[in-house]
Image 1 (cartoon, helix red, strand yellow):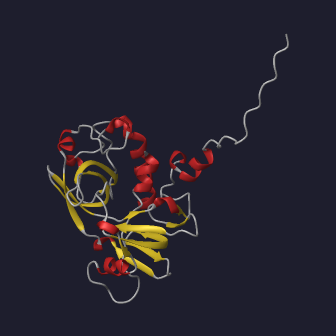
Image 2 (image 1 turned 30 degrees about the vertical axis):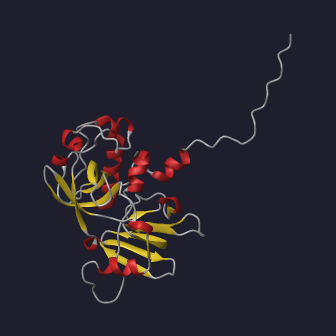
Image 3 (image 1 turned 180 degrees about the vertical axis):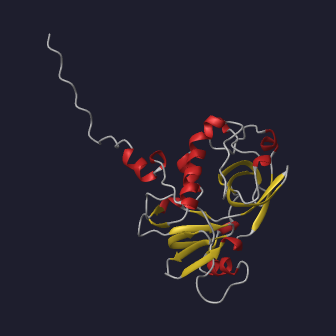
Length: 260
């Protein structure tokens, strides 16, 4: 769950670097010029990411980020937090795909900054879209989110809720789990993964289910804001080194028959 949320939480939007200052969303439009339309405009969204701009007891509004094809993106520095850094192609023959409803673009690499994200498209042009260029969208909440009840759209065991709407603050960076038809998606679940200048609160619905993930979020934020070293349990490079090796392909040896 932690790895997925952290990975998932790396998706972001960008505006063309250099030149005169661009009007709002100009970077988004210029990046789109390097892309191509998606057949049928794409299906319903299942996830949305970004900072909260407004919240009430019935909905949450965020500046939404792009979706990205993680299967061909890897961190250049695997010891970092994955928030501010660079992602490059895992397979150099295939692109990293950055997508938005209705269109997508092939990328060579993506570099994150506190102000936004710099995208190098496959033709090697660099595009930067500032965080403020990302469009805001309001998502109504499902009845299950009001009650803190399980929802089929939530991916964790038991489909438990992590955070509830009344726990959100403007400025929180969140991941939303969505349900419903394209263009009318509702928010079925919320996970806060950054609270700038503060700490991500633990879940009040299922604290033990999310404790490790939220402790990791707070460790990464302390590293980003204050340079605090990341504790070993949350160092992803060390986690990779500790993974058990894959079993060998050869068949296990047949034990010799017992002597009578």
